[in-house]
Image (tube, rainbow, N blue to C red; front, top):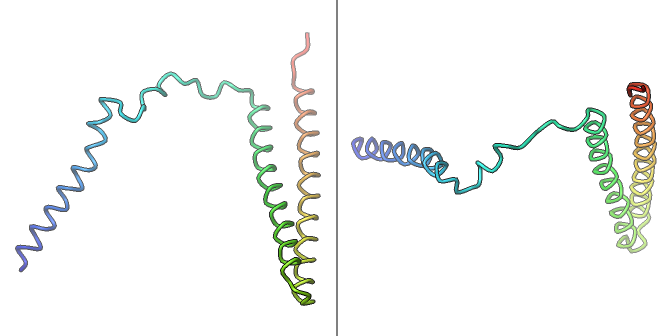
Length: 126
């Protein structure tokens, strides 16, 4: 019985090593298009543009999340069937979503102001 288990473990090791080596042999043929990314110039944007892009992506995601919270609160309110506890919970959820949206918009305005100010102060003028 132990010999069968030992043979099975060796077979598993062989199959795992075969599967791990298969992508390297296929890489020579460029099946997945990996070699297309060899001449990509990364990091060609300015630091200000990169930071602004990251801030916009994060704040955009948070804005979508706040909007979904508001919509979920509205859905809870519509499906509460007059239950005051559910209506109060939905009102709190909508209020939290609106406050979150206001905070996100203020954060966007502050970040935009700071980034524009930094850019204007650090730009080289002739």
